[in-house]
Length: 249
Ligand code: UGA
Ligand code: MN
Image (cartoon, rainbow, N blue to C red; front, side, top):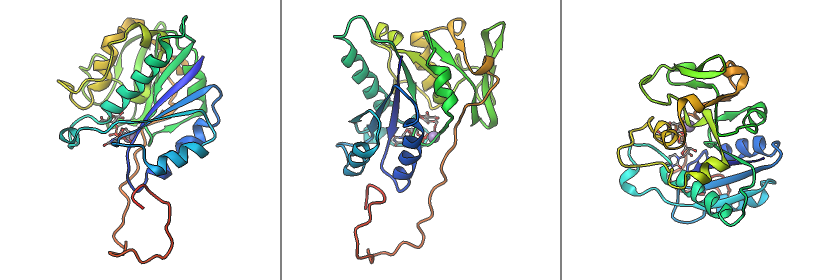
């Protein structure tokens, strides 16, 4: 199967660094299609040029997050992930029978091992695995007994039906196509509940397929890039050349 990786991304000083690191990983994965979705009213020149030179199959989409949703404490990238889902569904609706595929949500700042992609490629419906450096712990993981998920080892809101980060699961293309209405929702979705709200629409805990040696190996890390210090940037642009560094330059 082809792996489809949906990556929401937005303009900021570290954007090109994040995308470079991610592309360097994804380029090493065979049969991978990258769906890069800019949080913007139009495709930026920076990302367009980046995609053209990335050296891997890539679809470049864009949709802006409505301003009212750009607030701390609200879920991020809802519209972008939905745009990726819509593209995937549209592309496959006229291609019967559905081509084998696996969908994975790859945020632009996480760290992905190559082994992770081997694991997720055998997803039949929905697969899950541990995520490192998340939930206020060194890792979170699905608790597995006799090959079945029976609970969640998590430091945060253990009452969530699927107590898992966006980086902790993959979904087969067939499940995405057979649940055409499954999307990320703004209404009623609190931050940290997006994953659960989405997974509830397409699967059950009993059905989950544990990967990474019964969820005992961390193959992906929820790393976050620190806010860059620009305290010494000149007020007026004094450099004489136009440096392509971030989307604002
Ligand atoms: C956590 C989860 O790991 C995310 O999957 C979830 O979307 C997020 O919380 C949330 O609060 O909704 P966190 O590291 O806090 O992640 O979030 P970011 O990495 O800042 O953002 C997640 C993705 O959305 C990234 O790929 C980022 O580039 C993108 N994003 C973020 C946008 O497209 N627009 C924004 O305004 C912010
Ligand atoms: Mn992140």
